[in-house]
Length: 442
Image 1: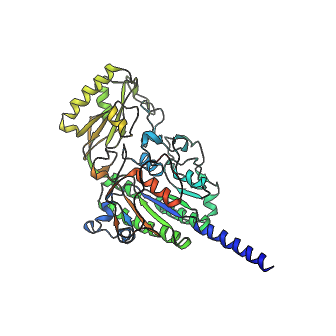
Image 2: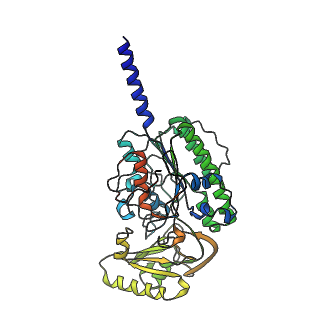
Image 3: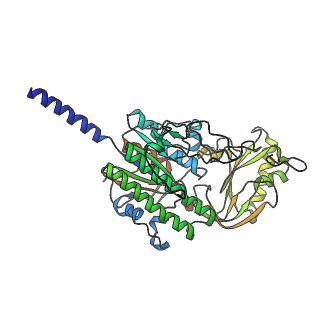
């Protein structure tokens, strides 16, 4: 009898130990957070007690060199696949829509992905997953999901699950005031999911800082207040996770940096004037695109624009586009930093089908539209999307938790290193991600 009891006790101990050994990682993306918000917090009179603690008690990068373009959806997907956008399939925030047939359409859906993700790799090893407002997750195979989908009057009803299980928000029992901000809602939902289901791998995307920077520029009073609010929200999420799992690892990332912008360049306006885009004659009915046909079109992404050809084999159109871009680049008023060829962009994992890529200088950006002046001013706003070569566009990586070195400075790293690093923490495999993990262990 004693042997049976001993065997049962041993089995229980092994089962409990096995369960305890399952990792817990929370990865929180603070959209648009330049590393300097934390590494130079005192210079900007910022009070960030939670985030600054990562510098002393964790491992952090001076900056993360991003992808082409440095915008939210490609960057977030690189951080969970370890691949360039041309490999994982999320080429920009918005889909290419030269005739404006699907206005406001973003790469919201999991079906757009062409590569395995961290949350899929976690599932394969029996780990549970959760995501709150992480990009490209509508209908994703995630256990506890509140997908990002900014529904508006311009978009169709989403084709897939936004919340999974469908009663998730009721199950986690979160009561929110009517005036709660989006990030307050996301924080409360994240804490509710952690408290109720204790997932092994949780992805969270908070975006208020990005919105403040777009409207008022980085390090504006509004942006500084937003990052201080994020500090409090990160602290609340960490407290909930560490109360459940004292050995959890917390990974703080961002998708891109930011620059101030005062001038917006309407490249499609200039393409139309050059005869590369035909506009509809007369008054165009509301809701109808003014563009009737196109030989070349700018796919804008803030600080860059991919120039697409209707017929990639049309040598005459390509030559005409090149002549136009060369003339614009030679004129300082357009603020063009450089023009990359198709081959140069493809080599760096950006738009695989573009003919050219226009990169602007900080202070200028690409804007949509074909009407009015080709250059329009909007002082003291902000944007991103530039080539990752610009130091101002570097993003953030900070790690804290059990098994993480204290006060380790990694220098400048590649964004493709983040997914292999988190895969190592989770004990999962991402064979397609070839970059080495960062050295975060003591």
